[in-house]
Length: 367
Image (tube, rainbow, N blue to C red; front, side, top):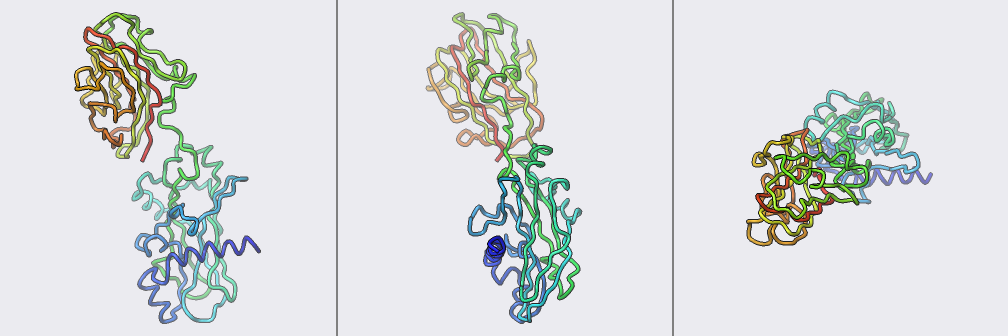
């Protein structure tokens, strides 16, 4: 009985949000008592202009449109049917089904949209309303454990599914509101794996950061950069040299998606040197100079007005940088123009010294 009351409260909250003007046709129906059946969720976002139904709806407790079972890790999304009009409330039922073609269309129109995998959800085939009742609810139930196990890459996606009602045993459908475009923000319910999983330089990450000399000069390459004790340390020793090295790590992004880049660094003792963080499809090659100008980058050199790389400092890039391309200095935002590429740390000296550089917490997150 308590669960039944809670369910009614959820549906009523959604109906209040929709109001009596979910669409012009429906408002007229109610005014004159014409009886129609529809899905309230189809008009909850914008009165039925798109039939989109975000989950979570708006992170407001008063309009919460799901239940989360933390014991079984299942997500129950509230859906339902409603009958308008002033006539006597008599029992009726409708068929419930998924519409694959419409789902594909919603996916194509949704940023980061993918179809909710069929093996991760259950849906009733029918919804019934009893005598004396105007509405009833049913659930789209999603198995989050299966989602996380079989589709971990979907954690940063919008999971789309079009659910519709049809074949009422009594009354007529409002066709404009007989389908609901469920769009689940997966990141609200699934852990989002880091795009750069080794950006904190934890133990074991050293095998995934690759190191190469771009000019082949001394000192020994193994002394130039090391991942240890949770940081990347770059140091050429005390000898002034002309040399360039690259430390890099593969990444995968989504072309056209907005991201945010950040990295923490501390530096001291550099002369005639520069350090840059680069995002690119171009892999560093041993013995070849790296051209960064056609890529995303942020960095410091020893010639810009102070503070620069020749003075001791600490900061977060790109805010601490003096040069950047494609990355907003104040926010760190950039729009990816590639899928598979690299995060690259370039350190170069011209008859000088890089001093001591400590790098930590390189992070890329989707917006």
